Every structure is written in C-alpha cells, then in structure tokens.
Length: 241
Image (cartoon, rainbow, N blue to C red; front, side):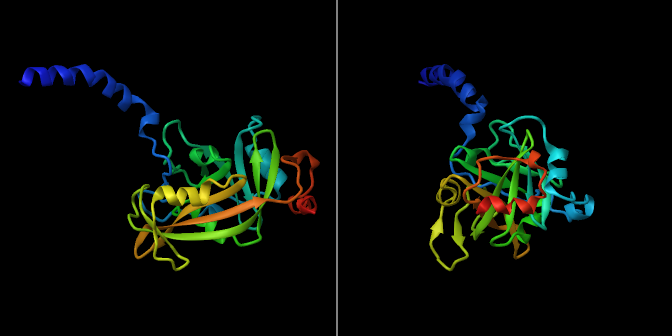
C-alpha cells in the first residue's frame, strides 16, 4: 500500500521543485507591502543626512543614469528629493532598507500606476509632510521629468499589521473590512497616477496602518518635459495652464 503512494510522490517531486524554485510562483496579486523597517530603530532623517539640492535641475543631474524609461528620482516641493530603486525580480513585497531612497512598486506598474514605497522609519517618514495640492516631479534616467499634483490622501488601519496580506479598515469611518486585494484594486489599478505608500505608526506598532498619498499628472503637460529647459522647477507650473 505504501509503495504506490511513495512512487506517486516521487513522480511529482520534480514538478514541486520547479514551482518552488520559480520566483513568480510566490507572487500574490494584490500584495500590500509592509513599509517599515523590520529592525525598528530611530534613524537619522534624510534632511539631516543630506542637504536637499538647490533646485530640480541639480537633483536630476545627481541621479540620471541615461535610461529613458528608468525612474531614478522623485522631487517634492519644500519636502524632499529622493532617488528611486527598483524591486528585485520575483519580490513584489520588497521595500529597500537603505535610508534616503524609495522603492518603485513593480506590481503597480502593471496597471499603469507609479507606486513609490518606503519604510516610515526611513524615507517614508517624509511622506507625511506631503499636502493636498502640492507639486511633485518624477525624474527619468535621461534627465526628463513629469509633474504631478497631490489630489488625495488615504489612511487605513491594518488588522494584521505585519502581513502584506492583511485586512484593512478605512480611516474614513467605515467599519467594512477590505482584503489586501481589495485595497490594492482601490489604490493601484486606476492607472495614470502616482502613489506614495508608507506605514502609519500607532499604538506602539510602526506597522499599525498604511498611508497612501495619491497624485495625478498636471493638466495639459507634455508626457515628459525635458529638464534641459533649465527652468527652475516651479516655473514649470506654466505647463499646467
């Protein structure tokens, strides 16, 4: 009796090894990364660690890498200038543990949304300074930029704070629980927008909730505006009219 069962197990063992060794097999659509450091310790703020560039042009020159479709930095008026790194292949919940950088959310990009992740104990702690109507710029590898305006700020409590598959409740007052997939669809699948995501520290837990700051492209601008115009960043507001 045992022999046929063992024979069957050995026959499917190669398939199991292939699946387990395939990074894409572990992906779960709708993951909401936990955006805080696992070693929760106070860190030096980016503003103290590095002086902000005098203007966007200087920042662009410091991060550009020559790749046209490669996002390399994000600049927020009166708030921060941060380089962007990408998630490793097959790691949809990866968030960099380097101070002063943000991580591009690869799964969001599949829906035409630019998602920027950072731990609230690192660069994500600066996301809370962003305000409605504030302008931000995404910087591409060839030195081009695209401008956005912050149009929404959403906050959610995580019912399983340490899990990327947690259920959530909205700060708006609704008691309805949302799965991680529901929340992902709510935030990331609308396309043509920029989303900053970090965690909310509450009740002694740095992963207590999730903060999403949503920005939409400035109206009537070119899809990518060359920074070679050499105009100071905020004179670029003319492109919104």
